[in-house]
Amino acid sequence: MKYVKNGLALLGLIAIAGVLIQAVSQAPANTTAHQVSTPPSDSLNVVHDYNIYALPLPEKIDFAGEPVPIQNPDIRERLDHELLVNVYWQSNMLLILKRAHKYFPIIEPILKKYGVPEDFKYLAVAESALQQVVSPAGATGFWQFMDSTGRSFGLEINDNIDERYNIEKATVAACKYLKKSYERFGSWTLAAAAYNAGNYGISHQQERQDVTNYYDLLLGTQTSRYVFRIIAFKEIMSHPHKYGFNFDEDDLYDLIPTRTVVVDTSVTDFARFAKHFGINYKILKIHNPWLREAQLENTEGYRYEIKIPKKGYYTYEP
Image 1 (cartoon, rainbow, N blue to C red):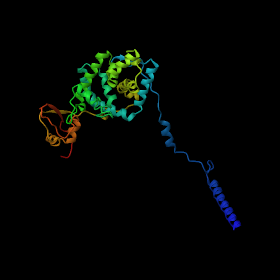
Image 2: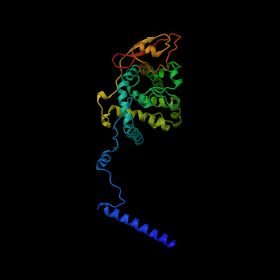
Image 3: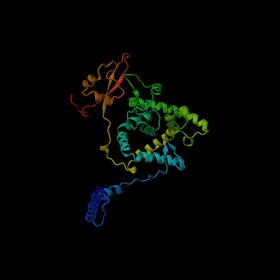
Image 4: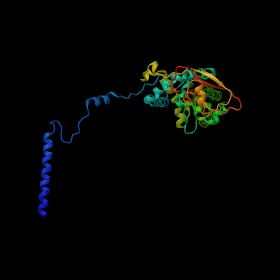
């Protein structure tokens, strides 16, 4: 039996060798039996055509009229970081540009009315990307107010109403906060930093480090990046085509015209309320996100201004 097994094994090896020899003999002359085929030339062109470029930094730039010391190597690196992060996160940046066309016309006149530089509209971009978002810590809305801070600057926040979601009123509150910070520091750049770190936080670090200028302060990672993120948004959004963002006017989001309905009583059913004005519940909430429930308890008779979109902009099944 030993010799039979050895003989069968030998025959098996000879058969395998024959198959391998045949495979090699049938392979193309310019390849080997184990070589992986190259990808089509079209896919190579796609790879070769996709290039990432370093971005030229502006020679001069300012925030709210206060110059950024771009000649300082530390400052150059920090600004370069934020420009690269936001330019090459193309989908997010393009969405911000689209939203800005819709919301900046609301924010800009309020900033002007309260004497806050227009550059602070980019602070709202840095805070929320112009969306009604809620942070893990509970900061809410375009301007990311915490509950207590929002209340201290005049916003109504309860189960039925949360004016942190009201763009106009939240922008007014942000203006009040920023002006208070400016009065304290005498610098809009420091006022912007204080929006992130708090007035006490900035004052404490100024005293601890014995410096007064934002660009001389060593701050935590978040606040250290914060103002540079705002400046980067200003640069990109002021010169979008320079940074490769191409769009037409029709590509941008538009603000839907509305009329105002004043309510000074309770509302038991906002779905029925909306139908009375020719819209549905969803559309009512889109234009009035500060209404947090399906009803409004208003026993005090407060006056609330509810926006109703003008006819012809929405269609829905009644």
